[in-house]
Image (cartoon, rainbow, N blue to C red; front, top):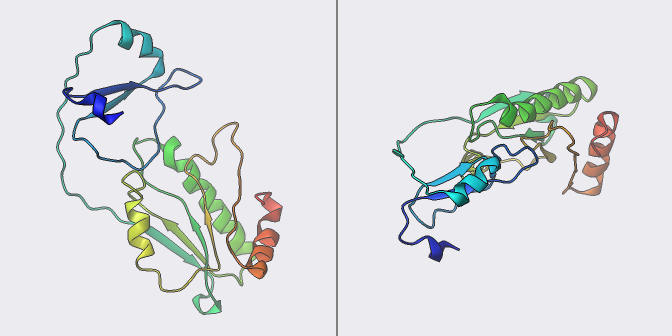
Length: 188
């Protein structure tokens, strides 16, 4: 409830997770207020409730530059591309947050390029995922050819005890081609 934070200088939230460690809240930011929000590991929730909280912070907003990365395989004139995408940037500077999605995307692209060489592939690794999907939105503005299909791989795809779910939005012929192509790696 944003109305209840009026008069405070910061918001401190203890996240819940199985290990008591910090859990990143992966959602588009909604800047309704201009106060800083700090996330702390859930194991400190009791201490947070029991004591008084003192927060020291310093922050600035600086313009920066980042780029989306794209890769292509196959003949571009062979038809619309099969697009594989996963975000490449995130909140934390660790390979575990985005590295797994990138690794799986590269493996799927490599497998498809070898086993379905007649299918043009496009790999898109957008930046700014943590900033309201900024890079993906900018990339979408430049796409002039409707892709055959898009395989979006979530950033935590190789997470332990995770499962993969495929949602296909394509015509019947494309769905059949996707099912056939991905069946050996048991995605669909």
